[in-house]
Amino acid sequence: MADDSGREQPIIVKKKVNGHSGHHGGAWKVAYADFVTAMMALFMVLWLLNSSQETQKAIGGYFSDPEGNGKLIGSDMAGAGGDAINLAVKDMEQLKEKIAQSLKQSSKFKALQDKITMVVTGEGLRIELMESDVGTFFESGSPVPTEEATEIIGRLAQEVGQLPNRVFLEGHTDSKQFAGEYSNWELSSDRANTARRIMQAHGVRSDQVAQVRGYADQRLRNAANAEDSSNRRISIIIQHLEGHGKPLLGPKGEHEAKRARAGEH
Image (cartoon, rainbow, N blue to C red; front, side, top):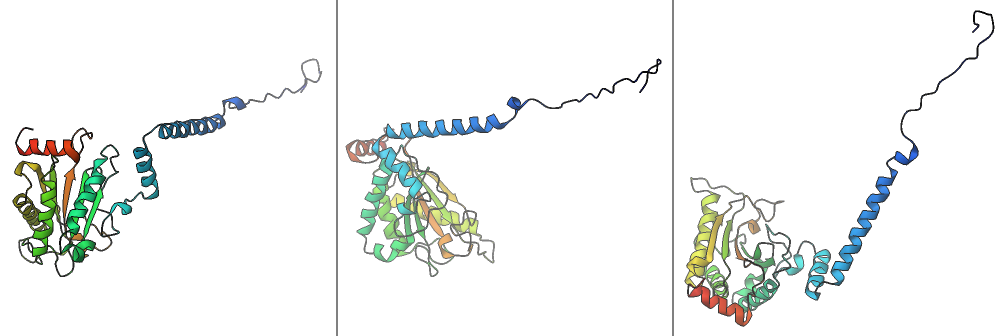
């Protein structure tokens, strides 16, 4: 390009650089996130090293058996509705063993042990009595209990009645529907109430029963087979004590149970 005098002018090219320099990139965020994760893991390890032996064993047991199958009695199936184990309530495992020993004294337990499970959950100690194809604890399609139900639930009640803990009772059914107006909702509620009456007749206090629930087929134990007989069951939940620090067994626990039965709570 020439100017008015005829001389050539140099061509000037301007380059515009977009973005930021390298040190403003996002690579540092990845490194920082890795550092924070490593520090968190370090603090967790330090906390575990200073925790009690019970806590260490409980946490180790959870990671080796996260579904809680190792805590079941008579079955390899986990209890429905179970939550994470509350590590603060150490006596629930002791209570489970005590109830198991009591049930083994029943002449009917050996034939029924694969139909009874016990598992510690975040709600408390959950005991489930599962039906068979021919009916084990209740007559088919009916809330009328069998002799086995009265024996097993009665023995459970003798142990539970000595505790200050509250009790929840649940009834569950499979997905098979009734032809008439009577439905799985009525059946599950009626069976739970039958279990309540048996327990109260064998030592459970009336004010100890906190809730009676009928879930019909809304909480299937075997969701892959909605008509499986194990979905028909009664669940008895011994709730954790408030405060999670009071012993369930031993002299102090027995003293609290006596006070509760005397109406001092």
